[in-house]
Length: 403
Image 1: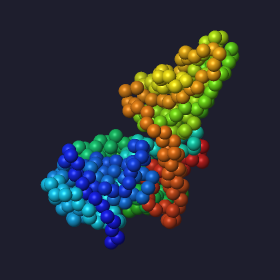
Image 2: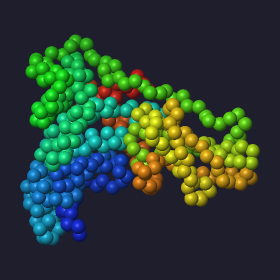
Image 3: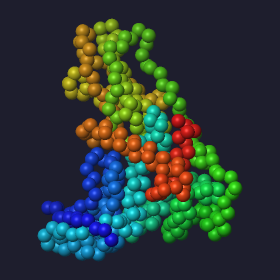
Image 4: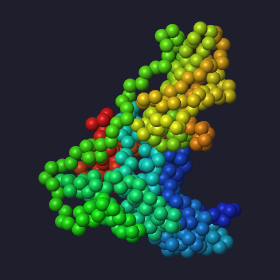
């Protein structure tokens, strides 16, 4: 088996690190998985390979280290944790079966958090219940990696997303179900049985799996099968009056790290602002295209407005139809045209502004488009490997329907 060199080191806080594929970059370019005694990390935008590991409990991690990195690495981690010098050793180039399953689970969690849903850019949302059930199945497949809290998370995923189970059963009976669907459904059945979950939907699943698989003659309309009510159409209007005079307008920064998922359309052009003259006064209006899942009430984004390089002011935004919008007076002389920068955030969630990650965001959009293209390819084509998530296959059918 091909191999590559890797390093195992111990930090001052006694955390042991295994170097993996390089994963530098903003958080939305990394897939992360919490496992027993450690955190594993993969780069989303590069080759998957073996993960980098940050091991805080070597004893716990020994339950899976050998199955992910091999026995020599597991022994070397134990030695480095006990105080021997940092180890340089060869790591398998090809991931083990458990490492591949873990990478897929981590990527699924990444998609649940960072998938760049955008009406403006034509990137459809992933159906959360379909993705949630596949994550529950993958969690069960990766149970060797997990501590009790991780296994509980798999059970919670299963309970939370059972609404997609009947549609998945119908999909299985269709003329051309995706090849991974059977395995996902059997893992769901096994996971439910393992924790004693029951219910009508799970009983229907068990009955379907016990019967001969007889596909129907007609293909299934996935857009209809997983249809969700559309909350709005892009039809926002301006808040200004006919007497306002525009003095400046521009686009703001859409930093995905500064608000939770599902709040804002992921497009780089989702944030816009306009500055108006109202007599001698100046006012700014900010509009941010909302994600279709954005909360209607109870949570309010804010715009962080920098004028002429001065400390920022915040403008409270409220959701109105398809946009978050708000406005505030500007403290600028009437004789000048201000230089304005605008970013958006959720107060209390925002970790603060970071470097300009525009190129990384565009790379993630390109990745999403590529994965949707793979998902739309015939199941037996070479392009369809590795397998897309079931939610990506369902979303790929919505591109022409909704965009």
